Length: 200
Image (cartoon, rainbow, N blue to C red; front, side):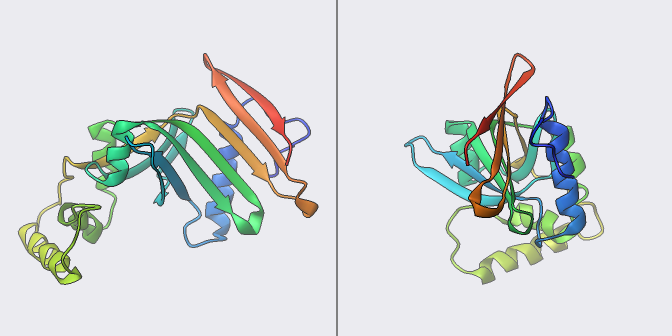
């Protein structure tokens, strides 16, 4: 999808979804829906890490994690976050700023049920971001939990689930020769999108 940057649409949602669909279809990278999630903790220290986009619509962008992880602690302290998608081969970026909140248990349950079994068991085994004596310790825990859940569906841990990041601002960035890029930044106020063109 090639958005008309001379006359951008009134909302970024469909344009962003088209870019996600195209990136996922063409597979220019191993994880075209990978996004850099940036948070700021209670001491004001920034941190970024890669997570996977697992949902996107007008309500926001969804990802899943351990609710006791460092990123979750940072979100609890300051729910204002930023995510960045970058597709080098397509010279495209999408940057989203918004507020992260937990999604419903029902939504998290539905997604967890689609994960492969090892990932489900791994969610139970990992105390994400905590020190680990050795990988052997982790894998022994995975083996023990696999045996415990043998022949049964793995339930979602209550300490694992999704967040939805609101679409407060959305910037669509299309690269061009000579670094004369197109940048359109959308911001929403009272349900109405406004946009402005930014210099490259």
